[in-house]
Image (tube, rainbow, N blue to C red; front, side):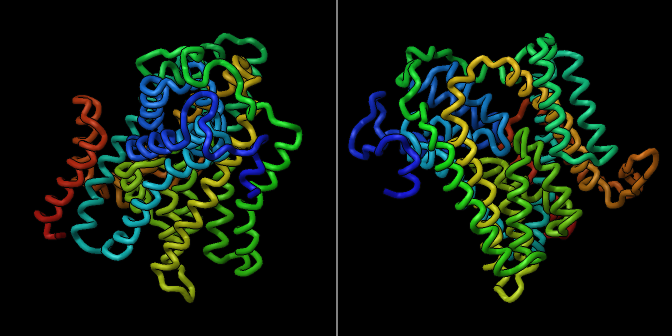
Amino acid sequence: MSKIESLDTAPIQHNDTPAHGISFNEALRVWARVAALSFGGPAGQIAVMHRIIVEEKRWIGETRFLHALNYCTLLPGPEAQQLAIYIGWLLHKTKGGLVAGILFVLPGAIAIMALSWIYAIFGNVGAVQALFFGLKAAVLAIVLEAVLRIGRRALKNNVMVGLAAAAFIALFLFDAPFPLVVLAAGVIGYLGGRAGWAAFLAGNGHGKVGGKQVADIDSALGEEVPDHARPPASWSLKVAAVGLVLWGGPILALLVLLGQGNVFTDISIFFSKMAMVTFGGAYAVLSYVAQQAVEHYGWLKPGEMLDGLGMAETTPGPLIMVTQFVGFMGAYRAPGSLNPLLAGTLGGLLTTWVTFVPCFLWIFLGAPFMETMRNNKALSAALAAITAAVVGVILNLAVWFALHVLFARLDEVRGFGMTVDVPVLSSVNIPSLILTLGAIIAVFRFKVGMLTVLGACSILGLLYGLLTGLV
């Protein structure tokens, strides 16, 4: 028996259909379909899963879906991918979770790797520069739309508005550590929920996910807790041992073989730390990744982080897959004795491994115990507070991107414990500003879809390149 199979409380019956009647082969086809349609960030991906898994297939009910989603939102990492792992695990145990989670990531990983190669080889070509010039404008509009979308859902009272404002001020003015901001919000929410304060019990921040309500009792899985969701005492030890070996083994090997300061060691350690603190979804953590990758490690330039986000926005899979591009470029620019493209490929794959392996660990370790925690008001309050703080975090990301894309020069102003980047107005990039305003109008006034805006801005960027002689 393999290590993975040994994690289940009973042997996997590969040829038998489980009691709920959903064959593994059917689930495999459905998860492949979900992966192929997983565009548009976590909100769109969760909606796709809800439509297919709950409304169309009726495999699980509404209450169980939201319960799983609430848990995944409280975890570090991409909540949509973790939700896929959770549901796959519910239906077909460890094997189902592995397949659902891997398929959710695979299309995006392949696409981002291919785009990273193109970017590295042709990035200085005028056509590529013009293309990404247009993409940056669209991405700024999309991030701003994410602020408002999540804000409408999360900021249900003045307390939640205050948490969002405090998170933005802490990050933008005082350069507070991102993990500390999210942790503080979660603790405040948890304590508020325990105390029974109404402001923290107004909702969990998700609201209704889909159009049709399917009761748990009417779903294939039903209301009962699956047998494998009642683990023996040895479960946690087995999961922790296997997960830590798969996650920490490569990091330890790189430390021993290459030592500290090597780009591969830095990538493995940084993105492993990121995997433990990336609460609040992809947009929230990108603020942390962008600042560290650009300002601390020097792997990317500010504009290149937006290029990578544009890649992630236009390909299936989690938006956090942009980290693969970051790892690729970091290793590509410090290849040592390796071919730069080979180094970049290894750096990208290493980033993806240490970013997503923990997602499986969090689900396999915690999901078996979540069925006993339904309707826990304190946890729901912590989720609501974190979601409110994330609004401020994403706003900080939007402002950071806008300053670095729309202005060629920034002045750093210090005082009263604050550090603020103030744009030099004379250095504004007029074409970029016009295109960004156009994208914002398209998104907010005319409700144009994300992929349409990205495509239109890319074409306009190419036309601008032709007119200016860049292409």
